[in-house]
Length: 343
Image (tube, rainbow, N blue to C red):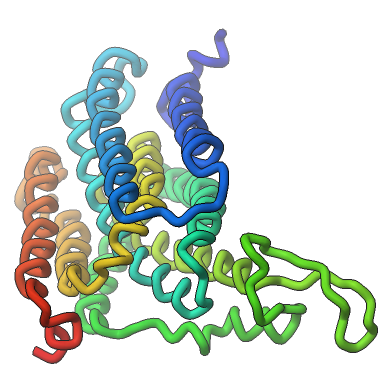
């Protein structure tokens, strides 16, 4: 019992274990109960699941509020209201960045001609990889920030640069066919040209020797590119959340809750990608804001040296709401994405 009450990264071990238990339970219900057999997820089901995941993510913020006020060791960490506000800000930012990731994933599935019935399996295993990867990156980031607080200013500059770059390249599309990793895998490994159901690997005769050897399927290549896409997005999202708060528990839980619903969110958004044509512009402004407020806080709020969490949450919500509303307004009617892009 002493182990459970001890702290890990300034948070009681039992709180970490409780959160991990919740995540595992949600994954088991998702794959083991709702999607035990391969099936095509309809938009209606996707919207319902997305609403459930978003609701759970927001509700967890209230538990963060209560637990930080009542359960964390005295004198360690943030107060409940501040912790919950920072959690919700991180959750909203990470959820929106995940929406941007959906567009790239949709292109990957389109390139490999992966039917919707098999896409859920790729996304499920992709999410498992994300959970482990984010844990490693956030753990390293928390350790570095705790030892060298000036690293936050490097994160801030990087976010500002990334936001500007995202604005300039908002209409650029990734060239999947010329992806260096994809070319390397096709050159160095046996790869089939056709899908084999939901299998990642199959045994087939080697064209040279005639012996049965393992071949990667296009479904496995899609999984690899989905994981790589998340690594690329994590390079943006992890500094972004550390620029909001350096508390490891808030950083990790807001990240994972935002990502958990990515599979469900994908099947809803993939059908209407063009309706969010201007979302990247809002994201670029948001990243510049998150990076800038680290520098602004020292001058505007010298007494605390921190940007007020409630104000940060309000600005974040306003920027994203404006981007989504403007996208939906500009893409209304039968005009389509080509007409919007041509303006």
